[in-house]
Image 1 (tube, helix red, strand yellow):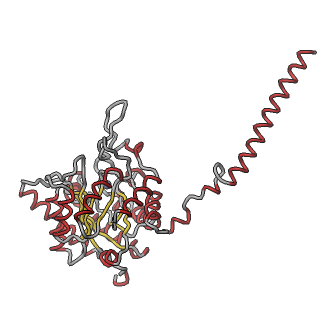
Image 2: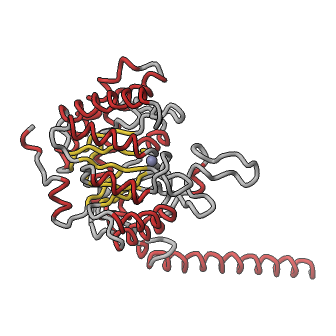
Image 3: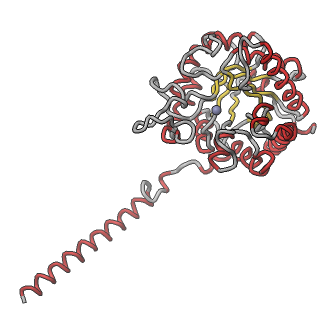
Length: 366
Ligand SMILES: [Zn+2]
């Protein structure tokens, strides 16, 4: 596996390069029918590994610099919940091996992944010990799986994020750590730390990249990122969900159906998705405020990822198929030709109609 070495995460960032990352595997596999909403466990890694390979390829094709092992929510408590705890190690190792394979094939970085455990409680010391053990086993597997760095993400408590970072530093054999927190309605973590301060504490504790992921869309994540930028000196990560969150609905969890009042998350939230132009505009703004590590979380799709990449002045392979509406049958030159054709048909029809009406009148006269 020695042949895989590409320029590392830290080296890229140190040289002023940006790092682009496609996330959102869970939502996308659910949309395609290979993952159960509610359970949210990446069983697809075991059940349909080729589909995972292909999605990794597709995201690199669309501009991702990173193949992230799909172990999100593939941790011990979640697998226990769906009665597949015995598959934990196999799932984790498979996901890492698949990610390594496709990263090698495409020349991308490979990231291991930890996420919020769902059992952390700030004042429950037992929960801290359980979290540490869950993180430890995953960090050991990620290092054995030859990851280039580890992403620990979707933490709503700073305390849990610090635990994850500590375990990566302890068991990660020096692999860099990208730690991202998840903001909900307010601008403080669940353990009551304002996000700029929380990110600074993670940076000071040795995280190579800090920032935010998930829950908020571009419109409500950007202002918070600007505040974080003021206090963090190192590389910042922005990985929002591509949904049109707003001051009234800070997160994609908050939307309700206007008629029924029923929560739209997670099954019916697609009516609030960002379009491509939203994503492009977001990425341009993020670049302008100095976001070095950028991606999209739940709701990501390859066409959105390409927008993000192009806003960061990239031309990924999928740019070959970027829109060119001058070729469109409706908007372009081809369209003009076909519109003339349509006009002709319309006129002919009108002509025929008038002729037939006249014929009827003449018949009446006779
Ligand atoms: Zn997400």
